[in-house]
Structure formats: C-alpha cells, structure tokens
Length: 241
Ligand SMILES: Nc1nc2c(ncn2[C@@H]2O[C@H](COP(=O)(O)OP(=O)(O)O)[C@@H](O)[C@H]2O)c(=O)[nH]1
Ligand SMILES: [Mg+2]
Image (tube, rainbow, N blue to C red; front, side, top):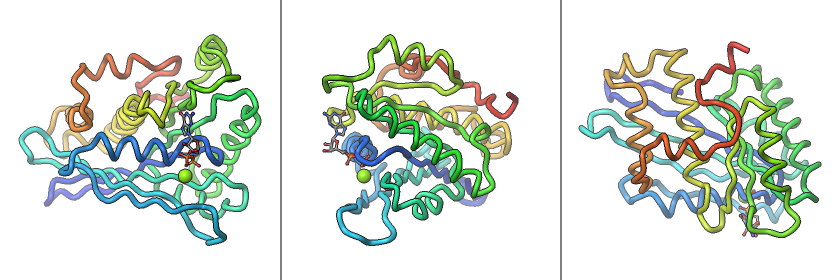
C-alpha cells in the first residue's frame, strides 16, 4: 500500500494466485471489459507458452471518489501457476495487500488447488508475510464445466474456513466482480484498521470500495454483492485469530 497525502491517492496491490489455467487471466480480461475507459489502464498479459523467466499479468485500475477528490489505484496482478515459475510468484507477492486464490472447480484439479494454496503459504512466508494476516478470498471458477465439486461440497468447505468463497465462470464474467469487490472490501478494511486510511484521507470508511463497485457497473447495493459469498467473513479480523 502506498499513501500519497498530497495527491490524496492510495495505491493497493492485489494478486490473483492459483494453479496454471484456473482462470486468473480470464478474471482480469473480464474486469478490463467491465471497467470504463476512465477506470482501466492497459491490460498487460504475457503468455506463458515460451520459456521466459518472468511473467505475470497486470491490470491497473483507478477509481475516483464521488467528488473526484480521492483516488484509489489498484495494481492487479496474476502469477504464473506452473511449478517452474516459483521465483516469479514470490516476486509478484512482494508488497501484496490482498490475495484471491482462483481455484479450478473440477474434481480432477482438487490436488492442484491444494498445492497452490500451500505454495502461496510458503511464498508468503519466504517474503516475511503470514497467510493468516493476508486478506484472502477464494474463487471456485469454471462452474459451467462437468465433473465439478458440488455446490454443497463448496458450501461445507467454505463453512470450515475463514475466507469468503465465491463461485465463478470467469469466461462469462460470472462471479468476477463479486470476487474482486469482495477482495477489495476485505483488503480495504484491513488497511483501514492498520493504517487508519479513511480518516487520513478524510472519507467515510468503505466509500471508496462502493465507488469502485459502481465504476465496474455494479448497480445493486454492495451488501448484496458481498452477500453472494459462502462462508468466511469480511470483518478483516484474520489478524486476531
Ligand atoms: N469453461 C470455462 N473455461 C474457463 C473458465 N475460466 C477460464 N477458462 C478457460 O481456461 C483456460 C485457462 O484460463 P486462463 O484465464 O488463461 O487461466 P490462468 O492460467 O489461470 O491465467 C482458458 O482456455 C480459458 O478460456 C470458466 O469459468 N469456464
Ligand atoms: Mg494466465
């Protein structure tokens, strides 16, 4: 997080993590399509089909408060999921304020999702960060495919964990905004508590997140959007557990 008092601007880094091909880039593509030209920067995606050593996607987003006075800048990154790109994942995680784990809902991918979660935990640790202190949401993507883990199974899983869980079909834009706004909400709350953001910026808490949602085309109240989550909570209290 960077806070610029003079420009009245806060910059937050969010990372979409997960195994290869779970749909991380598809989430960014959908968000890029939803955001207006004033909001979105250039979506930079790098294909992982060759042997370059450094790659990730980056989507910069800039949201402005209603009076235009305060800017919320988001740097939204993905990591490459392939095992060989561990160094890139560690690098991208540096300075992350929040993480979304994009899991593939297919039963066949269960093990790879779990490995990616362990990998996330280890890479955070290597960066001197703790998973328990990192704002985290989980997305179960590819809900349109056959042979997926059932809604009931996901609900049971979500009820056991502390992280809000969202279902998605990223390629159809389903659940994409919910996941993003959920992560942003959780991250903002956490930063607000640790850095007193809203007071320093002179804005009502969470106003910026509501603005962000509306600038992504959301017309329903943010509570309805966040209410789509299964399990977990948004009180940003992970640090206290
Ligand atoms: N059926 C279906 N395919 C998806 C979905 N999300 C992503 N894909 C496909 O899965 C493949 C990998 O997606 P991509 O976003 O590149 O995954 P990444 O490696 O995590 O960035 C692509 O062929 C996508 O079109 C989804 O929700 N449903
Ligand atoms: Mg990708």
